[in-house]
Each structure stands twice: as structure tokens, then as C-alpha cells.
Amino acid sequence: MSTRGDILPRLTSPSRSPNVILQSFPPMGVYETLFKFADATSKYMGEPGTHPWAQGFPLTTQLPGGPPIPDTIKLTPADLKYPTATGNLELRQALAAYFNTFYDAGIDEDHIAVFAGGRPAILATLAFLQPGTTIVVEETEYTPYYDMLERLGRSYSLIPSNESNRFRPTLDDHEVALAVGTKYVLLLKSNPCNPTGVVTQGDDLKLLVEMVSRPGRGALFDEAYEFYCDPQPESALRHIDDIDATDIFVIGAATKGLQVPGVRVGWVIAAKKHIE
Image 1 (tube, rainbow, N blue to C red):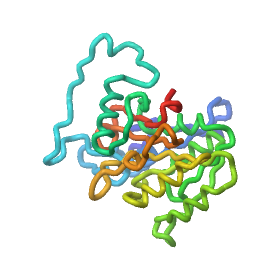
Image 2 (cartoon, rainbow, N blue to C red):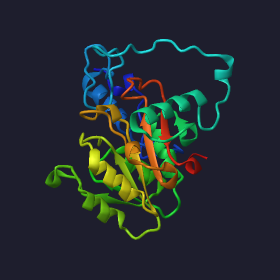
Image 3 (cartoon, helix red, strand yellow):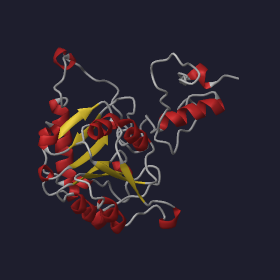
Image 4 (tube, rainbow, N blue to C red):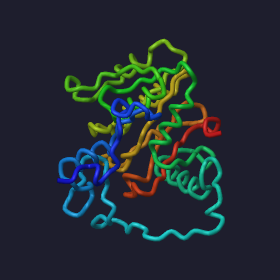
């Protein structure tokens, strides 16, 4: 029987290879699932006959009744040059137009930086936080967050999110967690939450945005599953009056909602001073 080593790269542990200069870094998120699936089935998830459900692997074919997925990209010599540090201007303008149209976000292209996917945008934001910033994060959250925080040496405290509260922390739970007594406190939150699927929306999201807009506070809202909200897409940007007056970062990506995980495009939306 084939093993995952026949299908996917095998990770080598330093304990077995003491002369390897790199630390062992276990697969995170979808890749952990891909490896386990390959171990169990000898197939790569997404191959014919497999059903990549419930683990962040969107269909990459046209949905019934949905728009066609582009199959060509025309490039010019100008497109092949090094991009600006914040990404392609037309892409940033298109993103700004989208968020202004559907969420009245009040942003322009200078509020946006483009990354090679959503996770690099999250990692960069966490890496550049001021020293001493405390992160508050729900105890049931997207597991790579904890790996990033530990690798970056960031201290964090947990917001109760478990069976006892049905994975639905209250605003009071967030308020208590944010009052940790450090100079800077940042909420790290996926919305909808991965893996619970719980959505913070409407007045609850508005009040949470107000809470993290106070001096010394901020938030990173990971909106990778924006289009999965019911009854309609939701974004923290709907409730931010002036993003330039906040330390709020809104992360998104084309991966899930636009069905293109292989096209590595993500972005962070924040105050212009932060993008600069």
C-alpha cells in the first residue's frame, strides 16, 4: 500500500535527523488533513472519487447556477515586473470598490495590501505588532493561529469557547479578555469561526467592533469564509465608521468564496498608516 510519502512530501523530525538545521514544523490546517487523508486512502484529496468537504477545500468547478470560473489570464510585460509593495493597483481598486459597494466601507486602494493568500497576511500582521501586545483569541479557533503565535513568541489569553457556552462567547466574555492590563490588546478572530461555523453578525458584530475600536485595543478579523454567512455575507467593515481611526485589520482571500485556492491571492484592509 502506498503511503503519504509516495504522494506528498514527508516531513522529517529533527529528533530522527539531529544534523538537520531546520526545526520540525508540523503541517497546519488543510495540509494536516491532506496528509491524514493520504495516509488513510492513498489518494490526494480532490482527486476523482474523493469529496473534499468540511475542511476548507472548496470546489474549483462551476457551481450550479453560479458564474463561470475564469480559465485564462492575459499578461502583459508590465504585469511581469516586480509589483508595488502593496500589490497590483487595479486589484486593490477592485477590492476597494467591492467593499465600498456592499459594506459602505469608506476605503480606497491605499487601505489595502495584497499577499500570496490570507495566511501570509495574517502572519505579517501578527509579526509586526508592537512588542508587548497581548493577543486574545477564542479557545476553539483556527488551529494555525496558535502555531503562529507560538512561533512568533506572542503572548495570548483565551476567551471561553466550548460546549458549555455552545461555542458562542458573549460580548462580556470578550470584554473581560480584552481587559488584560497591557498597553496593547488585539482580538484575533475568524468570522465565521473556523471550525465551529458560528457567525458574529448584526448588532453583536457592531458592538464588538466598537469594543475593539477603543484606544489601546485592536482586532484582526479573518473573513476567509465571508461568503458562507447566512442569510448574506458579513464583514466587520460594515460597522467601522473610520478605519483610519482604528487598529482593526480585516483579512480576506480569494481562496474560499471565489473557489480558487491555487491562485494565491489574499489581502489585509487597515488604516493607511498601517498599510504604509
